[in-house]
Image (cartoon, rainbow, N blue to C red; front, side, top):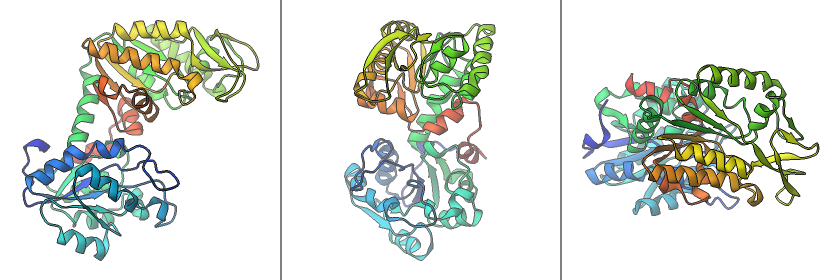
Length: 397
């Protein structure tokens, strides 16, 4: 496949698939522009070469056509500030308006197309829709790792309308794939995977796949209590997926057979309700009183997990250790972030991915202290589950 940095975009109209599915508040202000900032190097290189960039993205989940709250025009001003030049906007992503605006584009100019998901054909992977999009540019760059796991028109189908020497990954996508491959196929041991979040069901496949890669797996967050119940513990009112207790038990057995060390939190910070102002206490994780629930890992767990992380050469972190959005219950996630940053400073390779883990490293100011922060939650998860991602396969096609 063509390397992005080797390509000269002079005189080309470059169709770039970006992932600008960013959160907006009630005033349509962007509350987290991480995904937008991550695409700046790719767009800048195209413009500096003397090419023009036609950006396409989705935003939210519009139901049956255009909805103002999901319009990409809300992003135009901020994008202009990030890129340091004006951004033109097309009120459609296909059709006459889009075609005319794209045709007028001069070298060094940027056009943002309207939300792709205003057409149901996008999510259906419709070939005719993909062909109409493809007609707007003469080079295709996929820089949207966050949507690489979707077989949509703009991510998986469109590539076929560009010859192999006119389609490539952008810098963000290259970085994502390279980092993920490093962890999955070239990891140095000890390799610790830190898996958190609410549900075992969301993480079963990644856990199973990691049993063949990792030396240690740390399990935190709400999902830890399903594992704790599987080992016969009392977990009070903690989150538990009753229908996944056998699955958790099987995973623990498989790990033992493969000499993978599973670390569950020995103690927890508990609360009498799911509330930022709840009464809190501490308890062994396998003996939480009735009426109380585990909302964070305890001090012993922080110490134990941090020791494992600091000895590791490769670290994958997906999912928080507790309800870090509430100040009372963020200590465990912060302790893990500190340990990951320390280990990275001492030579470990660390990849952080998944919306909540990324939000946590950003919130605690550690984003620049880890090796790589992934922009693709679902895509990264599926990659580590061992699945081939349609957006990647199409480019290699």
